[in-house]
Image 1 (cartoon, each protein chain N blue to C red):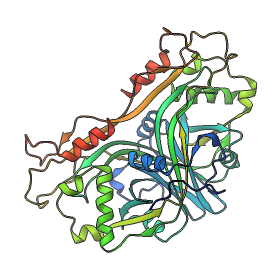
Image 2 (cartoon, chains in turn red, blue):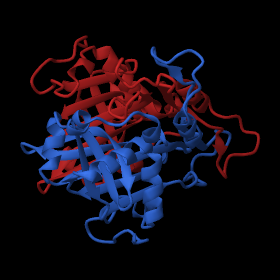
Image 3 (spheres, chains in turn purple, yellow):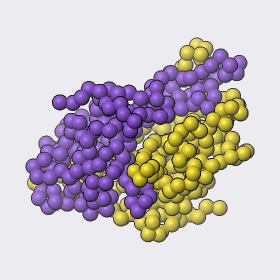
Image 4 (cartoon, chains in turn red, orange):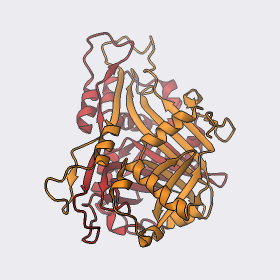
Length: 221
Length: 221
């Protein structure tokens, strides 16, 4: 069973704008379920490396997957320390000054290390990852072959050391922000939406769009 | 003057899916101009740290800014190696197999280190950063105070060591992907759009939305 509260330790303490930190695990889960991409950072030869990765969530763990041919994934799989940031930009804050202008966002910073997912768990994890990106697609497509499975690396990162920040407050504006109240201030909400699906070359004309395409379109709307 | 070609060195060589790498500096510029957020990674106490930051572009350099009270920014400002990833997710690739399912994206990975922007350049850089996020807002808002300027750190990272990847190809699908052509395969395009602007508490009723709000809405549309 999941702890409802995220940990409050020195490692997870948000130093900058701590009033935006939240400790509700449900908020973390909602963010991870809404996001499709995260950014994973490792140290390679003493230097920082950061790359985008597709994510999925399995209970209180984060799943990522990549090619067994990926240098990054082989390095991550060796158990070295990693940090994954998952960020959703959700609005622009038009204040009365450049200084107070900012963004609405939700972000999680996950620290830890990864372990390989193998055996029967690997297929289950790939199903979770596929359905995270395209809800229900795993059940629509043909079975994954042994060769494909062997070419894919699946990694699991526990969601133990996690900081979550939510910026969703009204504009900071003050009586002394100049006399000109005529300037518009406020929030411009941003969201990601799906456009019209574009069928592939091998899709026969008239083939109905898959339920997983509709499900993702609805999830984003 | 800018070099039109991005560097082709071992440092910038994309190892994974190298066919997606592009060397056109215009493609880098377009990505950076379309993106609002990047993810900056540094090494702290031997461990990787990655956090989202607002970005701007000034010619062949990337600008980022934060509070002088931010530990991350003070560390970045000491000139240590950093990597910044800028990623835009632009579509989901619904293939006929989970294995070939993927994403359309543009991504840049920038390696280097940052230098402080100071003096008169600092105000100019803040104008670029503000107008990057909200086109024209710098000219709409009141002047930045000396106190605000002192509380803000602006950093510049040269766009010298950069890898750009663009994933925008049709679905990989094959004759032996099972006999069931009835399944829909294709691309679900994704994009970020602006919703209806929400006026702040101090904005008098009937105040027209600022041109910078309209400009950002149009830029995203």
